[in-house]
Length: 132
Image (cartoon, rainbow, N blue to C red):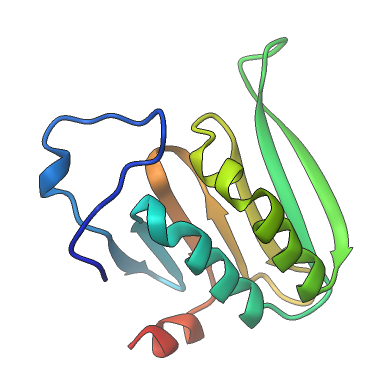
């Protein structure tokens, strides 16, 4: 992973110069904290590995309840999912309050970008092989 760690817009933390992107395996899942500048690249790499049809989900803060409201876009092709990242990836990564991800309807593989540049990949260990 990269040596330089870039914070997403709106995220601040003391000692940021000491941060590094990293990941670890928890059972069949991969969990990591990613530099802002590689989040979109990781998302696109995972999309390429997902079996179609793919779904996209977006979680936004719900002002009426204490939590998030989830929006889905089902039955996407890889091309549609990659187009979402090309068009909206910068906003999704840098928004700060939203959470988003992509997954496969064929199996339980997905990637989920949560708060503070945290990324969770479910059942996608084959992706690690390609990262080296």
